[in-house]
Length: 479
Image (tube, rainbow, N blue to C red; front, top):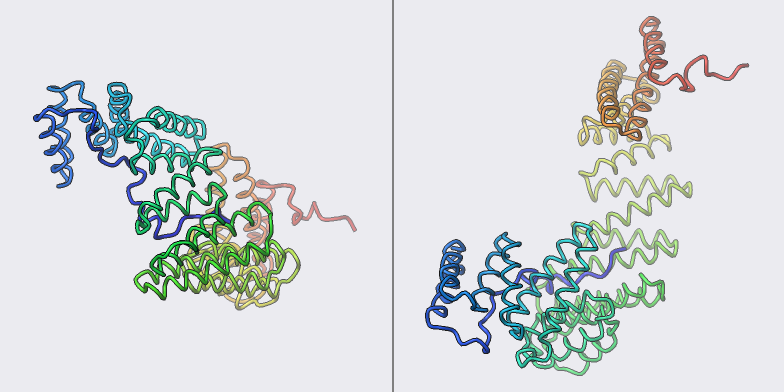
């Protein structure tokens, strides 16, 4: 079950939030005419896609005005967003040293530090992520009392930082609510309020805000849906009340339907959100072991949005539970549906083939193994199992089965050698087992065909690979 994710619209509205935006010169800095002209020309060049020319102009201007906060900010931001992060950050830090009370400089540096934080978090480096977040907060804190700190840009940046700081949710919500009060038609501020409400556990307050304001119907419905979903997810993740969580997901779906009807332009985005609300409801039923109801919700979620991998994962988990419970027919039907939902997922075809084999549906099993083989032609386990169905169950096309066993043997030997060479004991054990299976099956196939020399040869090869195999005559129980 994933954590709450902001709505598609909110993400679209927040384009560029991870990269520092251009910073206007602070009112505290009186710009010389040459500096102002260079900033204007650089802005024009960057807007035209010529970042190199913009950089050239800013560097030349900085040579002539080396203590300009605005030039440090502009060049630092330009370099940062164009891949020169180290020099860009250095210039932004220098800007805050030259203008310790400059709100624009602090805000642009905080944006860059927040982007650094998000990068490190994506890499799993929590120490550097936390350090950059703390730096961003400190940079904004230093100018908190300055006149420019009352501007919307500063408060918006502060909300984005506080959202990621432990215990910062309440302040973030208060700031976001104030921003929205000032501009209730600003969709980006609605998205920010949604995010802040979730972080600050202020969902009820945010819903009350929407109740108290007259807005375009689709706007109110869209963002109310996000709030209901956020509360549902919080209840689910914190094991508070599954029933309330389910009711909130249903309410979120209903609100999103209202939004789509009020503004058909966003129908596809709304449909995608509805799909996730359904699949997240499915996880509630899964936890309650109401597998049939969960299955139906996951299937319905996929039908609303075939790209919803959360729904496909839900069906997969339910199939696993049914298999563990011995409900093989239900599990087989579930995997059959998975093969329709995600026809390129070889593991689904393989599991469907295995369940068909376990339930005696050998022709269907062979078809499924054949499809798996098309998707993963170099997987020795699949190659072996495809042949196994022909040899032991369908008892036909034994020449094809032989050819596949030989290929499985060759693939497994190559994989085993590579695993041993790399010191990967787990993979080596897996490939040794697959190789052993192929050798056993070939030995038996040749024995059944009266090719006793070939059969004996493969039994001896098996002894060399794994002398502990139960199938070897010397390892059979004594009668």
